[in-house]
Image (cartoon, rainbow, N blue to C red; front, side):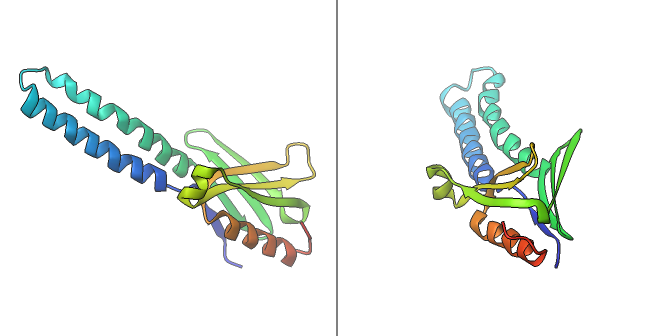
Length: 147
């Protein structure tokens, strides 16, 4: 089986970025045509909202769930990284949680549980979460378990 790599969705980040760019151009037009004598620092008002899509993109880059060779690996972090591994044979439960806004965006949270004390892995805001959950369950069945 090929490696399955799952990352958080960037749909909301792209949409937010598009809105922020439109907002920046609105602030730029306001500064240029309505208050041309205002200080150029007013443009910072248009740039500051770009932080939110940047943070969402960073979250998508720094979080990865990989299914390979009967092991699920969850990596989280950019400069310092945390890696958790879970054997598919120890996997007990796989389920999807979706809020109303996540359902509207077509994304959801994937939750993997095992019998260990810290055996819960949650990856937030992934595309097609139910399909991914089914793929993980199929891989677990091929390993000889029945979550």
